[in-house]
Length: 304
Ligand SMILES: [Fe+2]
Image 1 (cartoon, rainbow, N blue to C red):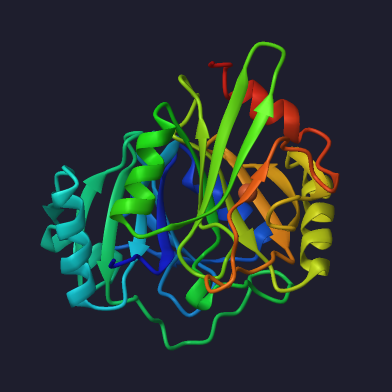
Image 2 (tube, rainbow, N blue to C red):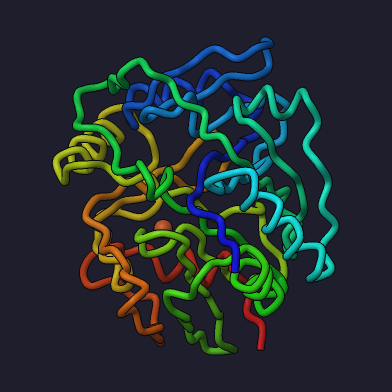
């Protein structure tokens, strides 16, 4: 089966691009790269031209998610898998391909309504990346920019889309019990990063996305980022802790578009040759993350 290989880029709609840029540079350590027009700007975190694209369109949510494949032949094969699975695939327009700085792409929509792009031709910037604040940089490369946790009202269909049509493998299934019902999550990988996408069952959700995770090269980057949030009054939605499944040490800060940004370090990696799918019956962390459970159960209204 043909598979996507990494989370390449994410497009974010915002009503306050300046606030996003300030957060990205002063707290996260990303670089701002000007866009082709005044409503678009890019955020850089490694050798890619960009990893996040900001669109000053007033819509405070994720705009699109871009998945990379290694070459044009794989792009064709993934498109065919989607069409064979009943998903409508639309070739990218010339202006979209140029905006993303890639060779080719196609578009489709995932079962929860997220505009999804698959592309080939990673957009490389030969100039070295220099973090915009003192920190050691990001763990990206072939593991992609990090991960996204998205809401879906149809978890089984979303798992089928990512696993059976885009080629992801399941890392684990997690259930969170509430007094009324169980909330289900699925975590999937497409490279050694423990998960590049997580799916949270939620019949109604305030946004398409719960959070984006960026992984730093050093634990000190996470600690200094937390200090900067506290010093500059950036709300911390979930304070420091270590997740049970991917083992990331992280905290979650608010961003101007109203979803979360997880800033972490130390995630474990997966070897598909030996990986056994895991099953968790709680969203509790190994330690810390005191607000995690209420965020998951509060954002995902109970469904049986
Ligand atoms: Fe996360």
